[in-house]
Image 1 (cartoon, one colour):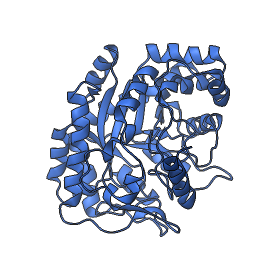
Image 2 (cartoon, helix red, strand yellow; image 1 turned 60 degrees about the horizontal axis):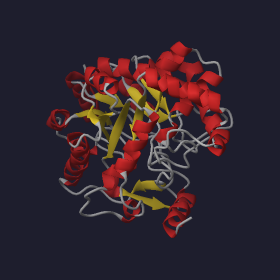
Image 3 (cartoon, rainbow, N blue to C red; image 1 turned 90 degrees about the horizontal axis):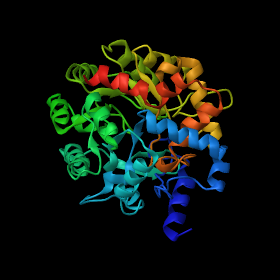
Image 4 (cartoon, rainbow, N blue to C red; image 1 turned 45 degrees about the vertical axis):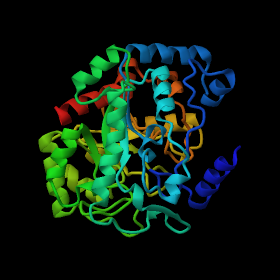
Length: 388
């Protein structure tokens, strides 16, 4: 292990979380080689036989699959004129390598999530990952533009296809390309200017997580140690405007009250892109209750199961989490949200191994119809209904 990796491990141990899980450090994915097939040791760690994995590869060659939330190759730190110590610890970005692994794993569409409150985040022993200060005037908007321009360049250069509509995503998949749906994790860049939602849509953004690790003008986060507040009046206006113009509302990181408030005014499906259910003996602020999951499902939405190291320590245990979600909300409302390349102690770290997810589901006797839904069909339905 390199000194850089040692520093990442130490930071994670101090805080116990990740960029998208309470209390920890983002960790760089190691091993996204884009290799066409895993070796025997990898298969053993996945709890799969080679025959099972090959079934998974055949599945992803035939069916469009989707990752509801990711930060491929830490693209959001590229071209940063003022990197913070936390983000600087990630090392150089490696988006091209992560995208190559997507192609190797035959991932159909990935939501490339910019990090709206990136400049504010720092680690502390008591709060973990949390804002260290407030935004300066115009700062959030400027950093949004920088991060989105990176994905725009990846698309313009042909590394990924534009994910602007369900029709475009399917066309890209048939051409053998991965589509990138531009997303933003945190609505901080909106400030109190609803016209920025239309501007983001014009930029190519199609999904926004209204909060991340910072309580903002829209609402409160689930990882705030104090009881979560409600969706604000501005937050209600943001949600309504997003649904009016065709931006998918992502309620990941939102407090239970914010989720309930937002889903109560939903006119189109919403999602929680990356989380898991709390369960007996498994409790964490980043996990959600069955009631929260059902509220999102009731909009016609989807909950993406995340392979973080919260309440699960192995890949097979993550499959347990996916099946637990399926039992609570039904197979029509479950998806996969890896939080790739910025997850906390992830149990799945390489897009080249993407077929292993469906292979493991099939090994648990999940039906082909349900596998199609969970691996991408549910997202595509929700995306078409939400984005139009």
